[in-house]
Amino acid sequence: MSPIIPVGPYHPALEEPYKIELDCDGEAVRNAHITVGFNFRAIEWLAERKNYTQDLALVERVCGICSNVHTLTFSRALEALAGIEVPERAKYIRVIVHEAERLHSHLLWAGIAAEVIGFQTLFMTCFALREKVMDLLEAVSGNRVNYAMNKPGGVTRDIVDPGMVAATARDIHAAMAKDIIPVFTTDPTVRARCAGVGVLTRDDALAWGALGPVARASGLSQDLRRAAPYEIYDRLDFEVPVRPEGDVLARIVVRALEIVESCRIIEQAVEGMPAGPTEVGDFIPIPAGEACARIEGPRGEVFYYIASDGSDVPVRVRIRTPTFQNMPTVALMVKEQTLADVPLIQASIDPCYSCTDR
Amino acid sequence: MEPDAILEELAVAGPWDVRGDGRGVEAPGLDVRAMARLMLDIEARWVTLTVTPAPDDGFRLLFHWDLDGSLLTISTEVPGARAMSIADIWPAADWAEREARDYYAIEFEGRDDVPALMLRPEDEPGLFSRTAELGRNEDPADAARTDGAAS
Image (cartoon, rainbow over all chains, first blue to last red; front, side, top):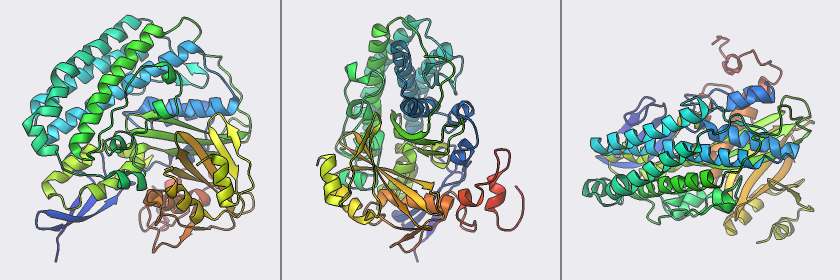
């Protein structure tokens, strides 16, 4: 009889709860069953009982890492409902903070991946770089976790020192090119640990709805910043890294290259940011109707649907986060892999259970 | 495939409601499995399923797809709480169907079972439906329990 090995809800690679039960034949994983919901907070339910101003603070708590993307998507859905055009300067500020959040999320993940691989020096290097991004976000917003930057119709704060923002992006860009990308792409330890491990094929990625870097590491090229540009992305010069291999190494490389592209985007946004207002006003009536909004978050597409009856409380709020789609693909990735590789494989999707459970 | 050709293929009268966030259409009596197969054939991407209560005790199902970067939302109403599953055609829909079971007790035909996703196996499905009248200061977790124990 094959042993079934339960891992979690508390597990070795990440500090969030989920459970994976592994059906093993010796060291080989034959099947996997995933259980989530340990962090279920019924945020959609709560959002349908609070007014839009309260909901803005609520949705920022969906995730402790990509908190900004939730207020941005929520705000954009309300702007679509109300027919509001955001001032130009606010669009630039939104993109700068959006990309800074991607930087800190990807660097956090890169550090954790390095630690799981067993590469402590690289872990320290990644976290030292991430600290620069956290300092930047703190300087811009006053906060290190929930930035409270977005609101329907604009942003809550201006960027008063854009030179500091650009300098930080240049520093990170240089460090990525000099230290981190060469290690992640050429170091024999990383390659031995990650190449050919945890493969997700292109067909499976599409059928299971994989998103973001996980999908792009399996050959699916879509990035909403390019495919359905929002804010000012249609005016910016950036690449969308795509790899065909579908393994852990491909997911590492895609994220590492995306860090460089985020730095380039921030530098361009700072350079092109016009003077002007940062919001359209404090009070925006939301008419009856429904709207969707999608944003390319650090882990992939974040989707919101909002239905309004014209009051200040939404009738329905639907939140679909990227890990909700990516997590089931782990069951495919771990099949026929060794038990020892499971922590690395599940970490390679950069999972967020807080997002998933909502 | 052009969006209008999708409507023609699915025998949906349409037309699309073109909005800033994409296109939406109401499709009464939609054959959701035919829609799922068509979306697979044209390499659309699954986005998600949104369920909302309908006025007459049924539910409105909104299927969101991405076609070359454009968001397509095809909506249909189902009487009661029964709908056809598409999880065998689109494994991506599995968790969304399980979540619809958790929140609204939707029964999806055509799959062996619809296990709880966010709720625990012993919890009664339909948490959002059963707690629809609760106010913002009440805890829906209390209604999730069938043993009467408060959280």
